Image (cartoon, rainbow, N blue to C red; front, side):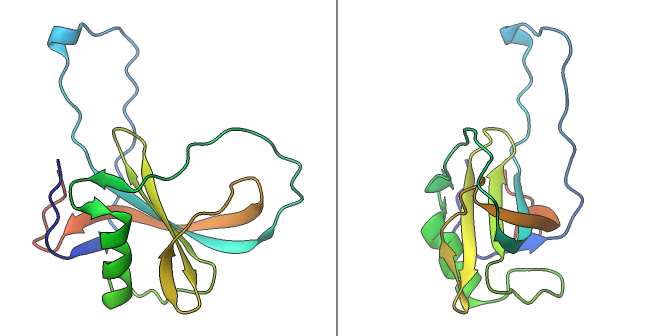
Amino acid sequence: MCDLDKDFILCKCEVPKPVIIKKKVKKRNFVPVKKEYIWTLHKYLGESDGNEMGRYMMPVGMLSNGLTHEFVETELNSHNCFDFDYLPAEGDNLIISDSVEFSRLEFIYRNGKWISEHYYPFGVITKRFGEGLLKKTENDILP
């Protein structure tokens, strides 16, 4: 579990590629995968025609102990959490996801601040323009 009690950095590091296992693995020989938190930034481009349909998982309120949407929203709005030159624009969408359980927190930049909100995926057009890993300020990748 990740206990966050200090700042974090949204590092523009290389995101690890998912590992595909092609053979069955017995439970007793299972080696746990390291949990990492991956972030992606998306630029809002406009509304879609709404002809797409499908199912998707809603964002959650907490990824682990301390990594809640309230904590992340407070950090995003109190100082620059990005380790690269980035100035948020109206409608930008930040997604922080768990690499193991595939749950996520989502934020949209509106009226000069980040808010815990998400876009309906079949109602808008966005373009990914950044990704990386969420790290503690001590430069340790979160467990």
